[in-house]
Image (cartoon, rainbow over all chains, first blue to last red; front, side):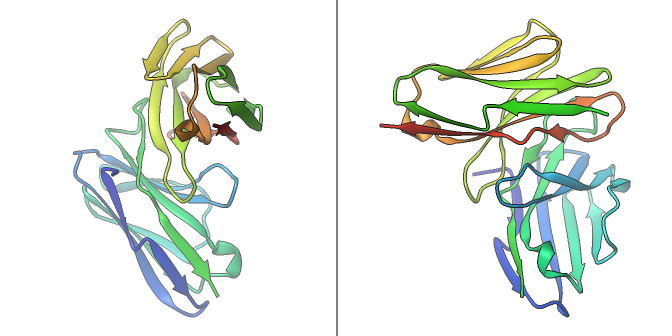
Length: 113
Length: 110
């Protein structure tokens, strides 16, 4: 079992739907991350939050909107996604954005119809 | 720009057949080199962090080593449950994020 919890585990949505992915950690970490992973590829960074503030946005389309309500929670709001957005979305956390390791959740498997 | 290259892309071993996975990197000021294991449909599981050349870390059948240009993940007498994709990542001074390699898919046959 991981210490980073992601919900839902699976999500199927149409291109006009609005949905949210949720991530929670209770390790006291102050940095949280969203990654996108396609099959047989490494994770690709999307967003980094440090002390609840967005510090990195890797040129992600605006149809993905991150939110960090508090130090334990991270959301990813989805709207008007495209079929190519189908992927495994991973959340991770680390003590800070330094040289500490990131700990990953098991992800949300997203399918866009 | 930081770069990470892992080899081989895929590795098939018999149970008990020891081997090594390679991670070559170029980075401006290494702040950490990380090894992860990923099973299908799961998130990456943290294994080791190495910070400076000469450093070594061990966990069960796995041993990670680091030089100024590369890291090795040595697997001693592997078992079928060691089958997974092993990912290497680096963090340098110029980035607030990790740069991942493409991974090595390890299969251990009984």
